[in-house]
Image 1: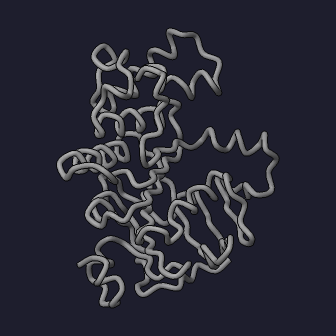
Image 2: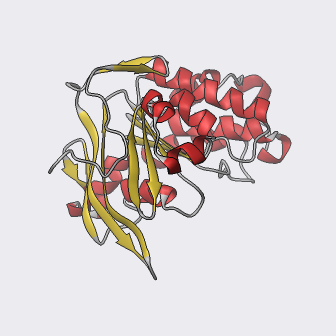
Image 3: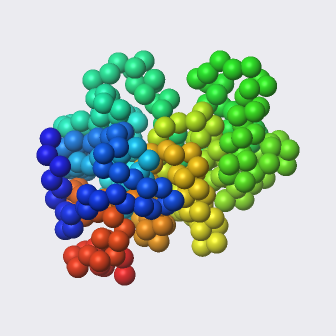
Length: 268
């Protein structure tokens, strides 16, 4: 595989510090997307390639309908590409059995755009769901992990644990969704439009939370968004999609300095 990207700006090879974490090109590649192509009635992705190293936060930026969320589905192997590879920790997940894919997914936590909480379950039950579904733990251990996950998103179990999603604000639902994604201590966090539908103050709170989790949990993250301000704040690197391909790949500083007309229009 070549590391060449169809970009307007080349990424620097020097270590980059962003979102409270220093990254080093010598660190382990956790997510390796190679020449990924997918079409339905028409092409969605064409020969998309990128790498995310341990501890990095890559944001995939672009307008609605450009294929950003599709990339997350391919990383989770909810979709299978027409061509190319998705390699997680050295394993091509498209070559794995269904049972083996389930094991790989245990390394990941997914934060959905609309939180995707179970309406009939309490906050406690929503956050505990991955532990009960995929792990055999004593209830006391489940409670400990739920408490820790909620504390990381600034929510107390005693105050919020018995509430239903209908009793929460939009920002609180998003934080519960993040707590559910991190409760099993994943190596990889995937965020689908984490600030969409939130007012500016609440969106800023979620951005700060993503930065803090990146720093404190030392996870590898992929953030899908069209929110330029949020992307600039949380990313070590940014990949911008246009016409099914990556048209820019680089650091937030390189994006800010880009003279590419499409990049400038998107930022401005």
